[in-house]
Each structure stands twice: as C-alpha cells, then as structure tokens.
Figure 1 (cartoon, rainbow, N blue to C red):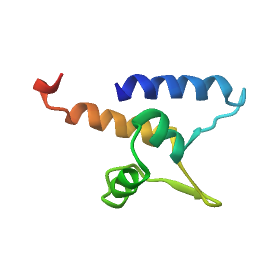
Figure 2: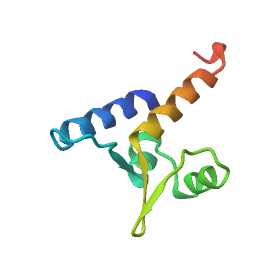
Figure 3: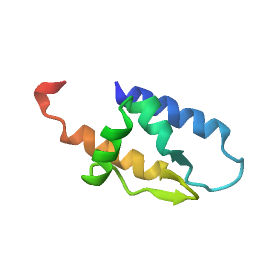
Figure 4: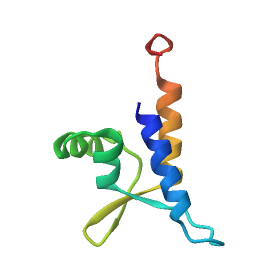
Length: 86
C-alpha cells in the first residue's frame, strides 16, 4: 500500500523536475506524512525521534527528505518485511 503511493509521488516529482538538471528532489515532510503514510503529526514525530525515519533537511521552518534517502528507506522496509506478511 505505502509503496504504491510512494511510487505515484515519485512519478509526480519526476515529471515536474527541471529538465537537464541533476537534482535529488526533496519531498516535504507533510507530503510523506499525509499523502503516503496517512499518520498523525504525533505518530510522525515519535517515529522521527525514535530514528525510524531517514535523515531530513530543514529549510526555514519546513522539513524535507531527499528522494534517494526515501527510496533507500523503502528498500530497507521491503527487505525487512517478514515473508509471511506478504
């Protein structure tokens, strides 16, 4: 479920990035929390404090994640899933 939503978000980001630039797109904290995971602010805050989320960047008062970090994090989650959960 999460991976499908993440793929859609990454596809949207890829379509809208600058042509000819090598950029690691940033994904807003709020976008990940609301549109991909659908969890509360409190849950997201606990996950971040417990180190369950990838490293983030703060620009102004907003938190962002690099796309490459999110993709690596998803890969780790998929490989860490128990075989009987599929």
